[in-house]
Length: 215
Image 1: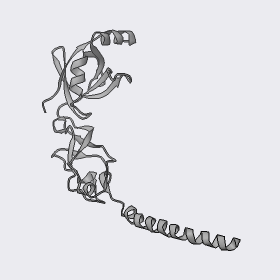
Image 2: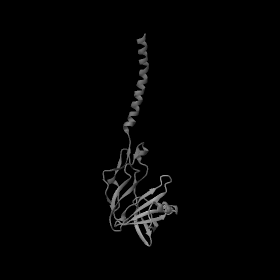
Image 3: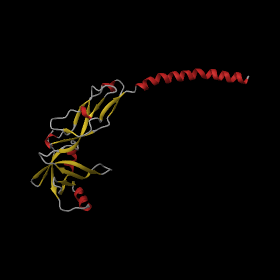
Image 4: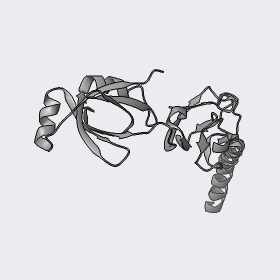
């Protein structure tokens, strides 16, 4: 996937009133935070940004072009209108080539597990893992094939294959996904049926005893 390029403009005026003017003009206000702690107030084309961020994750490095300069950065935070979902503000954090960084990478599951086809239930408790690597080695996502996962089997963080140069920071014993198959539930069903049948059979006998007692 080619790197997303976003064209931005710097802005001097700040405040909520100015932000409303920017949004009314079809743009999104934002801030680009630099490697040394400095920040630049910017704005971007709202449609271009909305289309672009649909295809990226939190660990995707995008290129922000600003007045003849380009910055590699993460989209770290987006504020949205709770009513219509439109982006109100965006924060970028610049990364430096050649300097290792830490990031949370989303995990995507692929395939239909054998255990699910046999009646099990798939659970997915861990949706991302933390890694450390150079910006050029940072994966946008982790694709995990779970088609061979059987009933009562699980995949742990330590089982995830990572590319060379990518160091795992998340605990290896954490469960990423598992297929649960409750054998006890399957065994309990016949027992419940037997109990119900016994109860049904006992009812007439109990009624008969009551009638004899009255007589």
